Image (cartoon, rainbow, N blue to C red):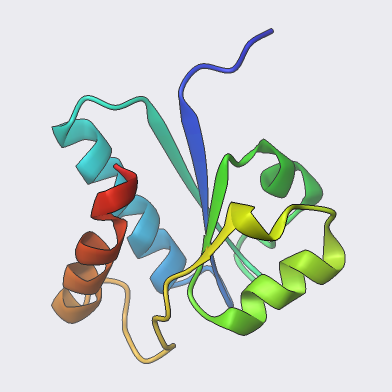
Length: 113
C-alpha cells in the first residue's frame, strides 16, 4: 500500500513542549497551504510522553530535532541517513504555548511546508 502525503517527525527531550508545539505549527502551515503533511511528535527520553521508536523514525520522511544531541541519539540508535534529520536549534527553555517558541518554529518550518 502506497503512503499518501508526507510524514514529519518532531523530536525533543520529553515530548512535552517543543516537539508537540512544532507538530501543531506544521499542521497549521500544511493546512493553510493544503498540503498532505502528517506531523507527529516524540521525545528521545525513555520517560517521554511518546518515546521515539523505530516505527516513528522509519515512517518519517523527515525528522526535525530541537538540539544536535537528539540528532546524534537518533543516528546512533537507528539506521537512518544523516540528511533525513534537521536540527532546529531550539533550546529547552520554552513552554509549549510560548509565543516566542511558536514564532521561531513558524519561521524555521516555513521552507518545509
